[in-house]
Image 1 (cartoon, rainbow, N blue to C red):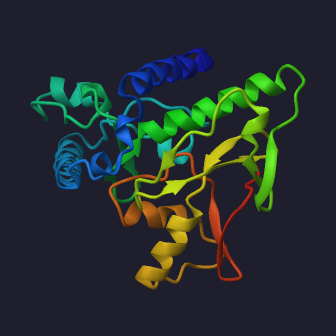
Image 2 (cartoon, rainbow, N blue to C red):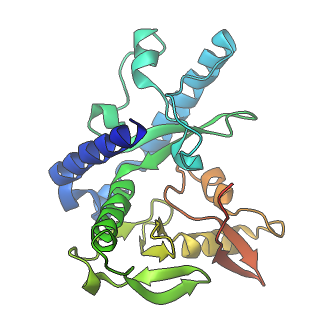
Length: 243
């Protein structure tokens, strides 16, 4: 049942990506009213705080223990609207035809509203699906050059799809996807993290997951990104054993 729901989401997002197409990534759309994006996040933050103050709860949709951290706590817009906390659902939200989910992070400490980029999310899913189709018929993983220990660039010449354009919501730059030895596909935010640490003169603790730095310094979550550590002064994706 969980798998059915998950693939149902993939189908819906595929249809959405087909409708919106490549028009989402031109530079002018990437700046797609960053002011209005910030305003939407700020307004939703106020709504979430009011809801939590009144109810002691967060208006989030159900997820299971296997849901990745930055995909886990999606705001239930329908509930907020039905209960009168919002009049209109934000135009940038998926529910209104936009290409973001409104998410909550730091849910147990200091709940913060962030956005999840559905365009990148869907394109990573499409790559994973193409790889799955290859390996389930006896093919090998399309491993390209080594990106980090345990992570590889993807050799698209072995797949039935072309390399998709992936643009980072953090920098506006194009980034690449990478693959681990289990066939999981990730967006590589390493360059974004290195730039952020350098420009902000940050000093992350040894062994700390660096992804929260991206979320803390933007309105977005690093969806589909692996865990990163600082290793000998360099940002490096690391393989994390399943619990």
